[in-house]
Length: 317
Image (cartoon, rainbow, N blue to C red; front, side, top):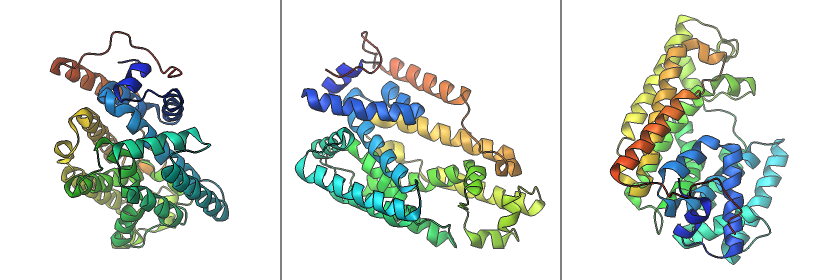
């Protein structure tokens, strides 16, 4: 794995302040989501890593504000954040090093600002005011308003000039699959927090009530509902299979790894059955490690060798 300093240099980031800003953003990702951070550092082409790390840090910041506090606190926090982001994108500067890094990434990679604006607007509406889905159409509207723009505000930085229509549509299919798997894997935790992420219309189809799910009742109807949701997720995952060809070559090992981990997690949910109502279904430790090692070996065999001066994140100076 190349050093962080050489990774910043490979991306063309030479200014000391900007190097420190991107280091700050990457450290935030490392603390919050070590697995995606390691996937980027180990598998993505070094010139892409700082941009994507800044994008992931920004996406996480928006998610955190949209999910923390009372509805009024969320609204106020998102309004403040939207104003700060707008100023950073407009002026190329901010008191916040994370926003400086992200604004620099958006400017350098020429990501259309409408993806960022849509993401922030969706955070203030679809996410901050989330109260479940009545129908599949509501779920799709949530993806369009919040989840899809959020992913493109991050992954869109791989493309110079932003994704074209086909690439953006590929990430929309990916988001559909990822969100279904995530909702199923986090079903127990979401229910404990008062969030039900399965459309109510599908509960009605199986004669299942919210009380059945919150009570973790292992009944034939509950098992049938969860099995049907898993089949929908698996169909969506298959539909996103062309994303590899729509990604930049330097990010393809990461995309392959993400798909493998989603497949692993969905299989675990299927095996858990009604047990997914009692405990969230995580990746575990062994599966991500095996997947990362396998992908790293594949990269080495393909000819991309790690920088001999490998090491952890430094100050970037």
